[in-house]
Every structure is written in structure tokens, then in C-alpha cells.
Length: 155
Image (cartoon, rainbow, N blue to C red; front, side, top):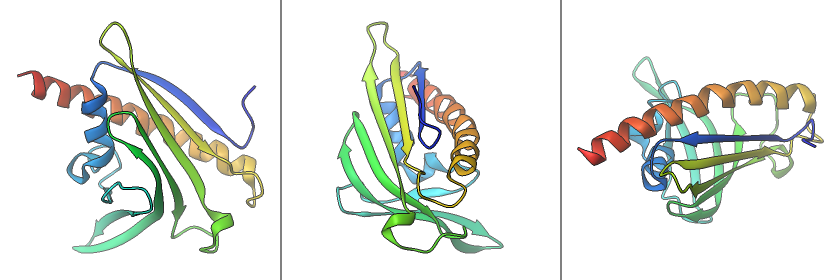
């Protein structure tokens, strides 16, 4: 049974793990499904991750975190904190996002998302529900961009 403070989603994508990995880690591609935000990092464990927008020609930090695990084409795990939110910048305010990419026999890839744990944060259940709704849009965008990239790679 899913916890009220953890998000778990699974999506089948008509693209290779490599194409999805590029979509998750290439700033030029992240902005295609994150409303213009770029995810910037070296994607090595311990490295910072910054999500940056451009507003009126100025860069604005939207969120930040640290890479916890990075296995190319397989798994990406990082911490995350929205900087313009109401939480202090301290370890207990960060949540963890974990992507797992599993090739399927039919050529598709199963993309598994785990995001949590929101327990202990103010309004934890509400935060989880709001983040869950945002993830639906983001995952649909990841699928769309990854499938477009797969088509370009095959051409």
C-alpha cells in the first residue's frame, strides 16, 4: 500500500533507457518538459543539482539538491528542495527523487519514479498530493520528449 507521504509512479515509454537518461540529464532536454527549467549537474554522486529558469533575461534558481546515485541509463537518485518554498534550507527539508529505468522485452522502457518522504514536513500529505499532480505532468513530458529523441536517434 502506498504511503500518503510517498509518491510512486510507473510509466512505459517507447524509448530506450539511453534516450530517457538523456532526457533526465541534458539541460537542453529538461527545459522541454520542466516549463523551461534546466536541470544542471555533472550527475556524479555528491554533485549539486540546480534547476534554473530564465525570467526577464535573468537566471533564477527554482530548486536545488545533491546527486545521491547515478548509474547511466539505469538509475538517478537525488535530493531536492524548492528554494522559493516555505521550508528552511536544512537537511530535514529535502525530499528524495529516485528514477529507475528497466528495459522491457518489447523494446519499451519501464520508468519507475519514487519521491518522498514528505513525512515530518509541514502539511506533508498536502505537499505529497501537490507533488504527485506535478509529477503526472512531468512524466508525460518525459515520455513525449524521450519518444521524440528515440525517433531522432533511429533516423
